[in-house]
Length: 199
Picture 1 (cartoon, helix red, strand yellow):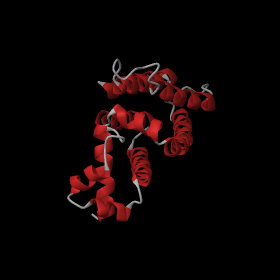
Picture 2: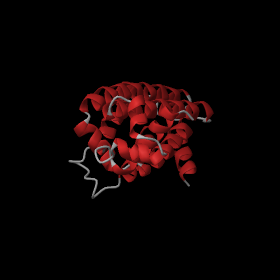
Picture 3: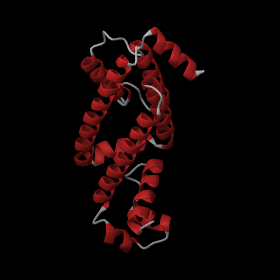
Picture 4: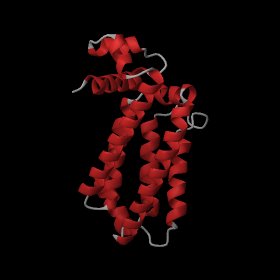
C-alpha cells in the first residue's frame, strides 16, 4: 500500500474513532510510523485530507452498493443487506465525526452531502421500480414521492435536535426506519420475504 493510501486509511480510522477536530496531523503520522513532513508532502493541509477521506469513503460505499445490488436475488434482499452493512458502519463511527464534519468543514460537507443524496435518491428510485416489477412492492406507490420521503426520514433521524445522540442509538433508528419503510411499501409476498429474512 502506498504511503498516501496508508495516510487516508489511518486518518479515516482516527476520525471515525475520535471525531475530526481532536485528531492532529501528528496523530496520523504517529499512527503509521512516518514523519509529519511526509503527511504534508501528500496533503497540503488537514482540510484537503478530510476531503480526500470523504471522497474515498463515498467511492468505497458506491462499490459496496453495486456489489450488493448485483449479488442479491431480489430487491428486498438487497435493501436488507444494505441495512446490515449500514448498521455495521454506523457502529464503527463516533457521532463526533459527523458533528465535526458539519460544524468545522461545511464547505466539504454540504456539496458532498448533496451529491450523495442525489445519488442515493436515484438508487432508491431504481430499487423501488425493480421491487414493483418483481411483485414485492405495491404497484400503486408513487415512486418519486416515496423515494423523497425515505431520504427525508434519513435526514430526520440524523437530526440531533429530534434524536439526541445521548438518548438514541443511531443504528437502532436506522434499523427501525429501514424495516418499517420496506414493510410499508411491500406486497404480501414482500412482507413475507422481509419477515423470513429477519428471522
